[in-house]
Image 1 (cartoon, rainbow, N blue to C red):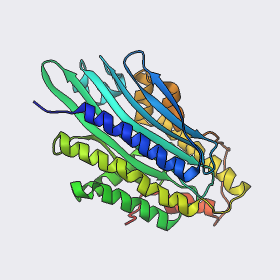
Image 2: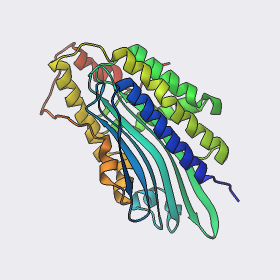
Image 3: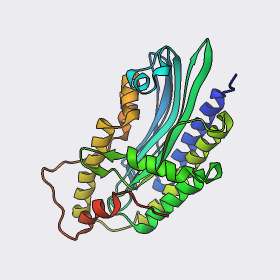
Image 4: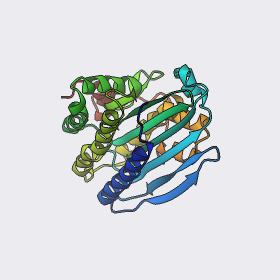
Length: 301
C-alpha cells in the first residue's frame, strides 16, 4: 500500500505561504491582509493580498486545501480513471504584479492532488513551477531566473530542467495570439517519479526556489526610472495575462468548476489592465523587441 503523508504536505504549504509572504513584504515594506475562507462542499484556505504597496501594485499568495466526493469535468476528462473517487487538492499559488514596468510579473504554484477509493490504491501526484513575465526584459534577469529553475530540479535528474522548461514554454502560451505569456521557467504536473518522498522533495525544492529566483530581480530593477509610456505598455501587456488566465489556465478552470472561492481563484488578475485595438509598437523600440526577442522559446543557460 502506498504511504502518502497528506498532513506533511499541508504543513509544508502553510509554511511556504508564510515564508513567501514575509519575503515579499520585506521587499515592499507593506503588509499582507489575510482572508480565511471555507468551501461549502469541503475544505477551505487562506488568501493573502498585498495591495497598493511601494513596490508591488498587487501581490496575492493563496493557500487552499479543498476536498470532495466527486471531481469536476476538467479532471475526469483529462484523467478518466479518476471518476468515482473522492479527492483532495492542496496548493500554494501566487502572482505578483509590480508597479514599476521594469520589474517583471511573476507567478508560482506548487500543489498536491490525491484521489481515493476504498477498493484500489490512491492516485496521487505533485505539480507546480514558476514563470516570469517581463515587459522590459534584461538578459541577465532571464539567465538568473532559468539558472534558479535549473538548480531547483537538477538534484532529481538532469533531464528534468529541459523537460519542465519545454513544458512551461508549451503551457504558458496564448494560441489565439501565437505568442508566449513570458520567458517561462518550470512547469510540471502528474509527477510521482521515485515514490511519494522523492516527488514531495522535488515539489519542496521548487517552492523553496521561488524567492531566491525572484527577489534579486526585484532588487535590481525596482529603482529604474519609468514614465507614462512604460506604464501604458505594461497595462497593455497585462491584458495578455488576463487573456491566458481566463481562456487557457487549467487551474482557474478547475477552481471554478470545483466550487472554489472565486475571489481567491481570480486574485491572479492584475488590478489594472488595458486593451487597444490594432496596437503596433514603434519600430525598433523596446516595446517592439519584446515579442520577437524574448517571448519565444530560448535556451537561456
